[in-house]
Length: 314
Image 1 (cartoon, rainbow, N blue to C red):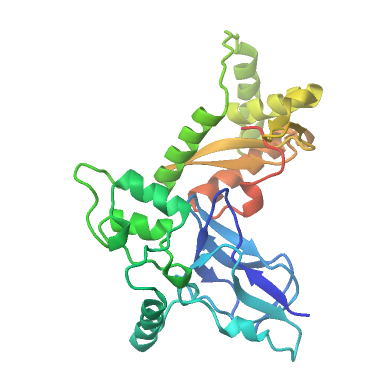
Image 2 (cartoon, helix red, strand yellow):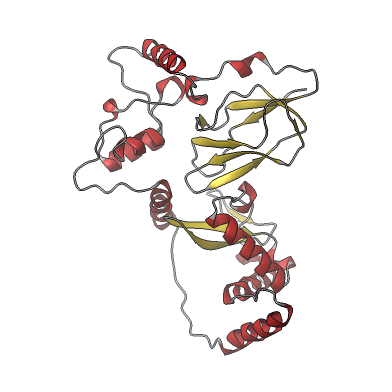
């Protein structure tokens, strides 16, 4: 039975994903769990794993296409099996045109389907972004399904690709904009209170120095202060499980795992990479995992599980 490959939702409030690369060619065999494609989101480039075993077939999205979340972009089929017929009829926005004739034909179809004088279709996120940038949505040509204006269309217009942004308005990168939105959302939707206490960190620094000397002998990378703090925090959360909880809007949810998100500086912003089950790791394991995640984050190669865990303390 054919398995659909869809554009995944890799972030909260994500509407679309940009296909950057196929790791397999059409007709090649794919094993469940191996990297199948690369998708660019507002935060990073993410490797997406194959949802099952099979032969890659019926690709409907080319590299560079911006595809709505949940839309089928390919199929994994058994030998001799053909992909479902719907796989060959992708929306104009889901497959980048490879020739001027195809591009003009797709534009003509969109133009005839839109009623004259009707308001343009626009996603809620794109409408909010247009208001922030002060751009006129009627001047933007949508690239989403049925000509819907997406946040990428508005951002491109604001950056000068389709028009000029308002006077004095500084256009932000997608990462910077997402950081601003999330920071504002955090401060306006979550009550904040602060506990401040002076702590003598002499023992912590001495421990880190001791680790450094030991690692020099084995020519390994020494754990940092951050690694030690992650280990300490994980032990504290294991001792006080009520602190490892999240507010869901309906009540308090106790998180089954101790997963700790570490802020990492990347180009134009910061991402949170996750140390899973930190309470089960030794300091050396935490250090190695944190180092690997840092390299992947800065290269834009974080996997979905490394940014979106169930149960997370930042």
